[in-house]
Length: 469
Image (cartoon, rainbow, N blue to C red):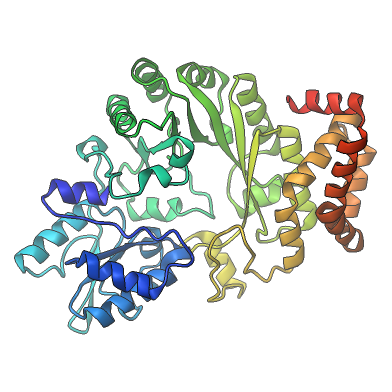
């Protein structure tokens, strides 16, 4: 989007899209020399900030007079850390389309840029902290995103034929692990949740599909695009008429209504990605502030499945105050909800969020920032060891299947002795370690023998019928 608005304003852009962990300092020096930019703009999340700051210092060594600016969620959520990092000249707080264009116009004209709204600027031994300008209410006033600066066909979703699009900005909910609560406060008093006209969305999709014929489906990456019934109806009418390609989107459990889901299915929806996060109501509501019930979450998945839409669950482990028993509640909820696919991440407190404040109060924060939220935990929890967190993260899918089999064979009632046995052995540390060994080594060996010598066809058929396979 930044590239698109800059090109519309008459500027030139190029992209260094760093996707390899093997990207070296020499690679960056070569790329910077080749591109010879007038401004180095770094978009980064918390996980990528350390790398971005390092590259900014390398650029200063090569070209001391080359200005740089940092933008994205991390500079917005943790501006003091960013602006005080050696080698960083400016940051953009909040949405950056108007700010980046104004900055480039001033740089091109040789004018002072210390008072550009949204920007924090280090200049002459002083930091200029400018206020945030109002957010753009008319998203249709922006050009379509500039996909040509990427190796577009090789992006994560696009290489599988899914084109990524967004039709909204903002989220109406303030979960404690997410940036949206801070962003809503940043733009308080304004209409933070905004929608593009469905006709413009359809036009962009058709334009991109024509340019990249290998695309066959749409991945909507919005937080919650269908929170308004009238917008959902209008979108379905336009999309079914103009595009009618398979699509998937993100959904919150308390926004699942069968009538709307059936309309979305008829328009082409094949999958809904639902934030389950935790199956323990204390964690769900007191820690994450989700304002949901376990039954409400389970019903949301069943409703989507009845509407003929596959479901995908988002889950977290390693949360503050979470115990092994609480993790197993998340496992059991997935087993009963029967999502088609599950994503499991290890909780990491992002700066500027309420849970970051909580972790700071408890002295859990460290300078050790992982590359992502799938590899390890950085929190010294007093309710779970790191070994337990990693076990539940790595074996989550297998554990869900174990509980699904137990439910399929002995029911979902409270007297299911297999479920009780699984609960006890997975929370008792000596037997939990045996499970770790068994799931890592024993289960593959069992499957190999089962496939070679046969298995229980009746039980297998019952299990497949239970999970809807």
